[in-house]
Length: 331
Picture (tube, rainbow, N blue to C red):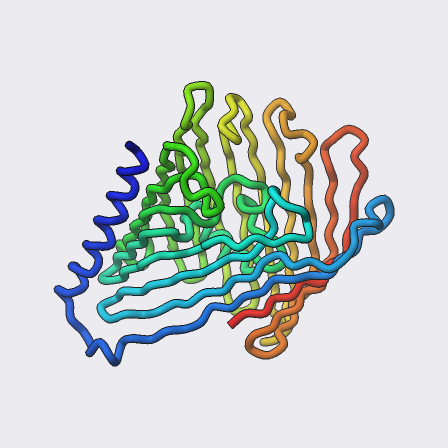
């Protein structure tokens, strides 16, 4: 029943968006139509030191292939395929997933999205961090939620200072579009009191699909400041009943900053801390640190040499250090 409701919501949105758009004609259709290919590749070469010296080699984190087409009256269509690693196959294999298959309508402060869309749970944090090719943003890195899902979202910009958004999603992520019944409901508020300063609060609830499971609650707070010379941000994330297990709560902090030396060279740093209630996830809890530089080689290529530390919370865990060279190729 819930699955049929989610499909009905998205079907209504897809019908409504063109209807709203027709009431506000603008330029001629031929003048507004515009398409663009989406090609993005994230790769790296890395090596551990000391007791993790054998953790070395080349990596291919992600490859995105897609197309985006702008239609008249604020409509946009986008389809993207994501080739990446999966826990279901060996490390050397890559599996293709549909990451986005969506229609978007923007008009008079409104933004509506329907289909397989980017979720709103940590999209702002990911964009502010700006180094997805180096490392995922906190909630994505530590599996607090999925970056895309079959969903319907609506956002409204009340004025230059306040914006709000809501989303209804399947809650399974884009790799498992619909496995079991159950929906995820989320809402966020973003405040920009002065130019460059962003404050956001977000909360969501993911329904449990079975009686012996517990629904997942996610709460997040973010504050960041950015100008042409530097950026600095901090976020706090809290999750209850991780993986739908009662009392498997966890939380974490991520702080990151960057400085632009010139148009082609910048510096960045980040510190994460992940912890779990009663140490249920002690094997994966710990602190991570990173320092690096970013070099922009023309319009489409970025290289980021960086040094990383991981301090596990587990008893007897040793500090691990790594050297990475991350690369992004995107058009």
